[in-house]
Structure formats: C-alpha cells, structure tokens
Image 1: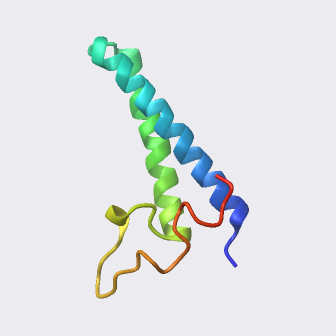
Image 2: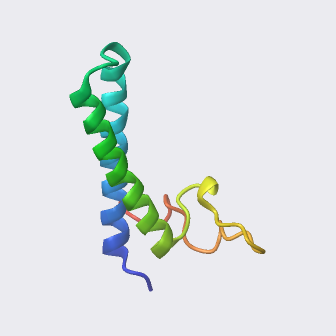
Image 3: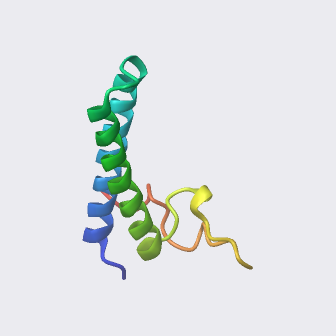
Length: 87
C-alpha cells in the first residue's frame, strides 16, 4: 500500500498553495503591478506545481487533465484524490 501519510501531506500542501494563489489573485486584480504580490504568486505557484508533480508520480493524477495518456487511460488506476483520505 502506498504511503497514505505522504499522500495526505501532499494534498495539504496543494490545497494550501491553491488557497494562497486564489487569495493573491484577488489582490492582484486590484493591484496588478505590485511586484511583491507577483513574486509571492510565483513562489506559491511553484510550491503547488512541485507538490502536484510529486503527488502525480506517487499516487496518480489529481485531475483528468493530469493523465499521462500513452496507450492506456490511467485515471481510474488508483484511488481518486477525494477517495480514502482525510484531506
């Protein structure tokens, strides 16, 4: 069985980074040239992207957009992100 603690940890990072990105996007809507907010957005986006990449490598795609289609549709191979965890 795959490491459920790491799965939950990665989902927590993804959720927190997503929230931070959404929050700073609202600020940037009214302050589009704030360099500090832009840098923060870039920093949090990288954290989220790294966590999504690691999650996808270890546990499978988070969304159907993340499926690596070669000759097999692997979206249903592992528990879906909302199944089997206390996220």
